[in-house]
Image (cartoon, rainbow, N blue to C red; front, top):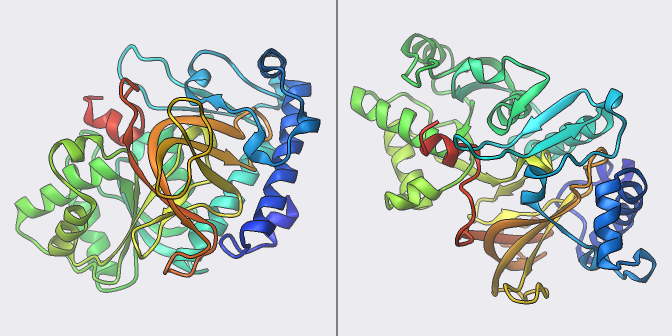
Length: 357
């Protein structure tokens, strides 16, 4: 993996990245085939022969929902030191992702490289739009807690904006604004929570904190906001009107492939880094869609060493817009998510919280 971390996350072009990813993903396929019996049974059942595969496009992918039905791990139990869970509404099964130290370290390194390319090398004062209780259990993390902990690496003087009942912690917020207002700061939160519990509540108070030099990174589902006719443009406009934030980056990611997130660039496009890729597949035969064609999103990641999560078919649909030619200057594929597949379960920490948890 050193070759990945020696490479800037958005620098390699199509051919170089394709060769790097194919080599690593073939290696992971062999590893999980040898060490994870359920995965081996699936591969054998498909009649897949890795020796006949040309690139990672040819690798079999698992439906992401399989992690809700099976315990999939490629390391001995004694090597598992952290378990990640997806968010789920009451009574709904959750994914369980088992991490050894190798995989957790790879995830943090990749996340650091990706986010630092947007934030710069310096850590920033950080306001977390959530409550501190979410990250109390360091051995069992929900997607929400994992996201907070992962992004906290980029912050100093970390403060939480919410109490456990999701009301504004005005003492914490006021103290943060007094210390860092007008300076470059980092805000992090999940999309619906930023909208519902920060933007709306700050507006009610009729105050306008100076976060004009701030940068907000947010992620999670748009389902609830879309239902309320809140587009990304409206979201960003209201943030600017509320507290002056101009720099806002959404990201796409999932607990099943932590670390390999897809950040939104200045042009409003989500980008695949050197550690991952996105493929859109036809709804009927799973063939690869062309640029501009809507399909089911498949995500591949070079990071999952402790479980077979390196090639996953998601429950999202989207479109790949292009590759190596985004006006922002970053190499790699850029794309947009168009929504959930029909009949797919609600998932994602932001949507799950909006559903009533």
